[in-house]
Length: 394
Image (cartoon, rainbow, N blue to C red; front, side, top):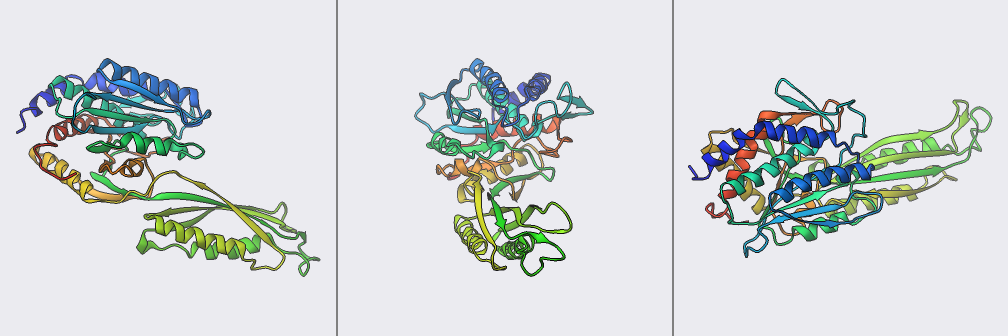
């Protein structure tokens, strides 16, 4: 047994109630990603706690209508590479969605907006840092990257570039997104684009103008069928028409139609293939006399795929779990996006999905299991102390 583990375990056991209170307070600092002032308050609160632990804070603005990014470093004078802990403090839930107070605790579960996605993981990171300080660990600096607009996909700002730049030079990273109910760690994520297609046709009476009308809704149906066929599940790509709007009354030929398409892919080449395919389909008129245009909203997340370094980190955590007689971690490749890819773009191997285990992320039923917060904090702090002795290549 590593000499540090007993001290780490005792420290976390002694601070369980404090961890829970900290998480509840952070969850009650609600903030949808568009509620910039609220998100900044949550970030300020969390950074204040880090400053008490000896971290130096730096702020980066990304846009006037979004909360910025903060980094926090302790041990920056060391010549060794930092260990990176990362996460976001914005949520998809608007303030008031969960009632007052937003956070509730019952039967070993904690409920509230962002409790697993991903404030619980960040509280774990805080107490990992506290535990490492308590045992006198100084082998590697510890660095936080704290994000204020992850749920807004970084659209319209350069947060992704800042995350990548601030991750450069780190030894490895742990992104504290929600833990998996089947005890799997995230080793891959897709990138995501949204296409918004607008079609113009010629309206008219549904009975009298069948020959002269140009039905924008029917044109959309042709395009949607062709676009959906761009899906390639073997390549890990999905193309999903998701929202459509057309017409104003049942007795009229629609002269306008709009629809949206969600696109997910694992590689940049697949993204280019799908983008070109959609553009070709939109520019082709199945019904003469109709025209169409599209725009895109590109989630600024680099695709994240398992590498040798990620495999090594996963192996380290499983070896650590075995030493602690904890269950073995599996692997999962998620369809949802995260900043893990933006960290990996800096050449830093990063594991994802290490946060508090729970269910219903992005849903008003969101909850986390408190015991998993304590036990995973112990495991991760212990694993960090083993990074050098593991002799694994990152």
